[in-house]
Every structure is written in structure tokens, then in C-alpha cells.
Length: 322
Image (tube, rainbow, N blue to C red; front, side, top):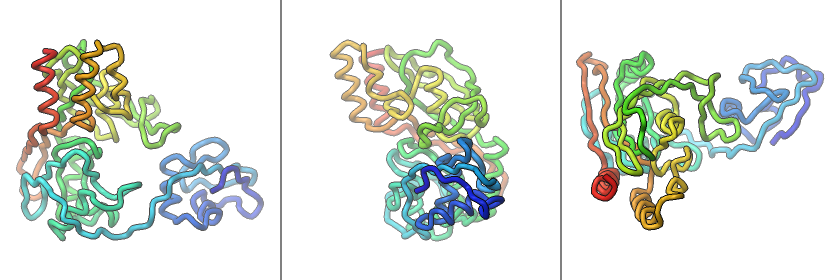
């Protein structure tokens, strides 16, 4: 892996991605593109796009990155799926927490896509081969409702609705603390975190992100909140909740982990730690999804009931800390 490579005569005017392909013969073109996109590559200390033209004297730095093994097809797997609705064009899934949506680093089998290919061979092909049918995603530990496209027409139609922000989404989250404002709008831009490319952070130079919220219930240590994201940025609700100093419970990545119990009475700390251990994931659930059916044009609305682990947490809070 390049750590500090200076461009010499004969290499000038070469595209950055082509240069790296030559310098890193053990890494594929696709992987090079991912390295650049995920900000593992800099030129003269700055981020550049793959088509940047190199100049003599440029210093190219490529940081180590875990390279994913090359897989080019999905082998169907018999994975239990909670299918709420299905017709010739779409499938509505209530995704269980812990299920990864599609293959990626560290998750090459056992994903939702593998289960979908077992359930239904006909899925849209507008995405790359490893993401058939996938129009949008949920984080691994987020449960709830997703729409999957069976045909390319359905896929492009629903994707356009997401792009135009006409899809209505409602999430239920269990967050730390009592919110001062019981409803409102969080409008702060998000950008990939350069120090940790697997996370995102609030940054004025990032992409616009807007989330409306409404507090449904307050308890002594936690709140139940409805979130209505108007944009669809990665980890958006989780980062926005953290930004408001009310991160999603058990969200270790965004300051909502077990350390939030510090300062609680010892018996309360033990009790809540036990609850978090039983839930064993962050408390966020995609409750509702509303959009226009890609063929009929009719407005359709689907609901995924709150999973038992989150219900148990809320009921415990009501009983002991209401």
C-alpha cells in the first residue's frame, strides 16, 4: 500500500484512479474507486476525485484499508423474512434487527439480499450485482419497514420518489434524556468523518440533512421519539439525535452507549444496563413508509409494529421510571 508516493515525469496528467491501479496491482479497479470515495486517498494532503489529473511533484497518500474479497453474484440462502406485502412489482419487508441489507465488508453471506434471492428470483437489476432490488437501506441494527423492487420500472419510479422527497418515513426511537422541545426540526448538514470513515458527523460543508421530531413519551432517563426524516443521509437520525444531546440508546457509534448510565444511582445503573444487554442493539425502528405505487400510482402506506425488544424497554421505563 502506498504511504507517500511522489508523481514523477511520465506520470503527469494521469487520472488519480488509473495511477493507483498501476501502483497497487494487488487491488482491483473497483476497490480503488472505493478507497478514493471513502476518503482513504489524498493528493498533497487534500481529497480529490478519481478523475483528478496528476501533476509532477504531487504527493499521493493511500492509507491502509480493509479490502473486501471480490464477489460478483448472490447465492440464495433460506433466511426467514417477514414479508408484509408483495405483488408483481414490489415487496414490503419488516427487517429484523441484526440483519445486514446487502453484502459488504465483513458480511459476505447471510444478508437480506441473499434471503430475497431465495424467496424471489426476479429482482430489479439497476444496482450493482450484489444489491438486486435494493432501493434504500436500513442500518444493520435498525429494524423495520423497507420496500424492495422486483422490476427495473418499479425501482426507478420509487428511487425517483425518494430523490424528490415525496416518500414519507416515520421512525420510532428510544433516546437518552428528557427533551426540552417536544417537537421541532433538526436541520444540520452531515459529512463522512475523515478520522473514522465508517461514521459521519455534523459539518456545514456536508450534505443537507433534515429531520423533524415529536416526543411521544418522557421518562426519567429516556424518551420515546418519533422521527420524520425528509432527507435520507446515512445514519441521519442517529447523528441528529446525538447532535441534540439525546442519542439513541445503545448506539455505541454515536455516543449512546453504556457510558450514558454513568452518574445514575447504582441500582438504576444495574437495572438499565441489564435492559440494554437484553435489547442488544440500538433502539431505532422504521415504523411507517408511504409512497405512490410505481404502477397504479395509488398512495400506499405500510406499517411495521414495534418489535418486542423495544416494547419491553418502553414498558419497563413506564413501570419503573415514569
